[in-house]
Image (cartoon, rainbow, N blue to C red; front, side, top):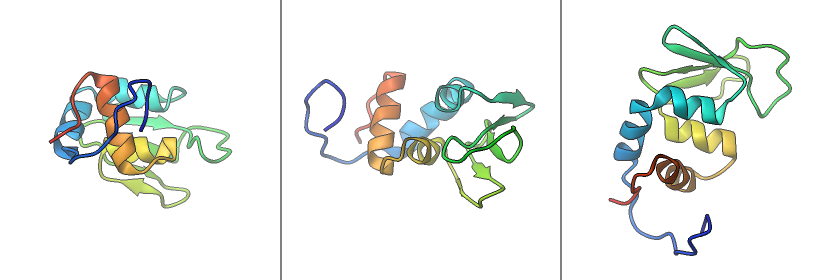
Length: 109
């Protein structure tokens, strides 16, 4: 259970749809997850919020594909749901639900 709605979160998540909508709003989604970064072409460059980064550079998100990586630690993922899960420390299922709700779409298949 998450959020204030009180609904039990069961059922199948449509990760493809959530990722597709997130990718369509990639700049806003990534800025919401990593507010202290900047856009450089098709990449959003930020600090890794889970370690004491001093400067931008090693943590990048491709806003065209959703792929992201921290080249200093080897952490990375293939889509914006995995980025949301990484940043928030949530399982991918819960991160997908929260991300979908923040965009006003249903996460359910």
